[in-house]
Image 1 (tube, rainbow, N blue to C red):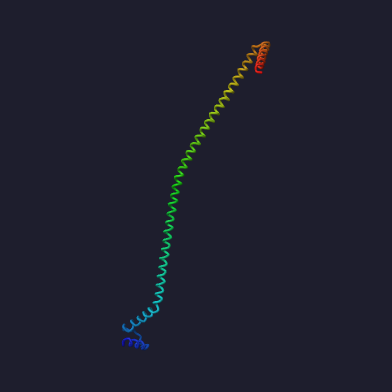
Image 2 (image 1 turned 180 degrees about the vertical axis):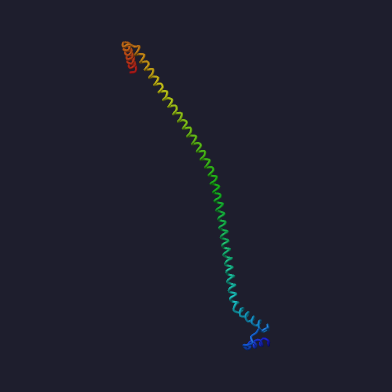
Length: 184
């Protein structure tokens, strides 16, 4: 204890201005200064340090809590996204299956429709050919008939005399009259 009081007395006694130097007595200077500094730091800094550590601890806990909530939310969103993906994949498979069957059905309908149209066109072609053949045959017949008639008229005109001609006309008129009586 005597050393401690001597240290304080020694601190109260300042040397003269001309004798500046280092105090090499470690036991008298550094432990006292350090103990005072540490004591002040511990006394005043303890509350501040505790507040800082408590605040840091709360921020860390809040960050962990928020991270856990975000993680749970992300997991839930991931599960929802996976469920939607499974649903969309199932719908896509269904559309694919329906699409293929629809394509096949449309293909068959198109083939049947085309076949039916081809048959109708074939029938129309055949009817047109038949009509054209009949028209051509009728034109040929008419032409032949006209030529035969002209030939017959020419032959009759050259072979028949006026008298023979009048008798033929009268005979024909008589036949027509008889036919008319029969039909009436």
